[in-house]
Image (cartoon, rainbow, N blue to C red; front, side):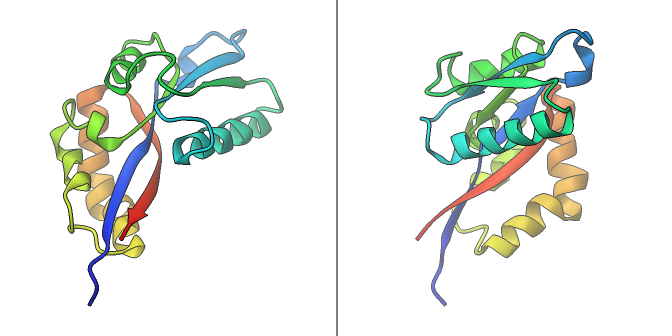
Length: 151
């Protein structure tokens, strides 16, 4: 059986402060993206922005800032937690210092397939332990995950 090395990048983790905490008149938000336009993080941010605009009938707009324009990924976690930044997309390894339990997702050879990644992050363990502990320790909400795989 060929071992496949999967990385769940929560690089792809969208970290968000509660959108509802902003005043009703606020319609523009900022999203920090650590990677360059065109990559996995960019695609996740673009899709999230499209869905948000669709679900709010265009009342909410999100501006994307790739290439770390709004700070490095660890800084944007802090900024989101204290309300200085609305959204951030980052690699899970940059969240691990704030919530060590999510470091499980960065361990090589733990996740052998896309199916295992989905089960780990969206199954009982992910929902009850990993994600809950992350939200409680970092004071932000995780609203998306993606997976990047390498052989």
